[in-house]
Image 1 (cartoon, rainbow, N blue to C red):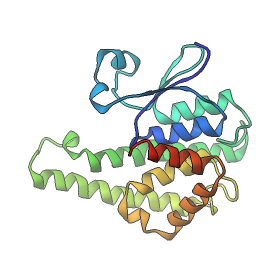
Image 2 (tube, one colour; image 1 turned 90 degrees about the vertical axis):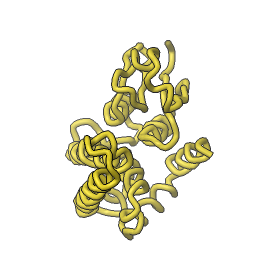
Image 3 (cartoon, rainbow, N blue to C red; image 1 turned 60 degrees about the horizontal axis):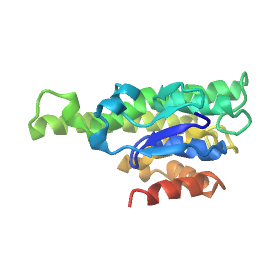
Image 4 (tube, one colour; image 1 turned 180 degrees about the vertical axis):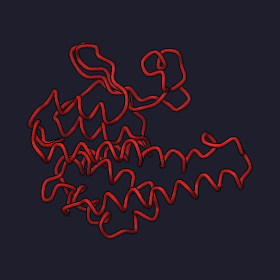
Length: 207
């Protein structure tokens, strides 16, 4: 293999990895994975968790988990601007918030949209309870992130891939879409010369 391979689907966390590849100037081989195909043996051999995004590096290394893919892209293409430079205090800050969104924010999104996976009570009341708790947790998580932002981006005047991850989650959570801080961040993100076009191409692919 001489290039990256990217397994993705619209409406998933692969939005962030799609943008990361574009931002780093990488044109991977792209494989669109239908939701029904995520449990096919071929895909499970690639990612037993049956989730997208997934990626294969040019040397054949298999990657899953959005944050891991982002770090691998950044390390393979230093200076691309996805994250601050290795060893810098701002990189440590960016990684802190990337992991916060990945381990706290994204699971809350999953609980909200796939409540049946997180309860043995399949009644509507049981599912509504899971969704309500997830929504409150998302309110808390995104408020914590907003308070940490220097503005207009997480780290001040320069965007990083963590900003993209945040706005993806905010777009999926109706109360966050109404928050001025995230509305301003989304405008700034979409005005970026690489992020904006890559985001729009990803959205158009789902139509």
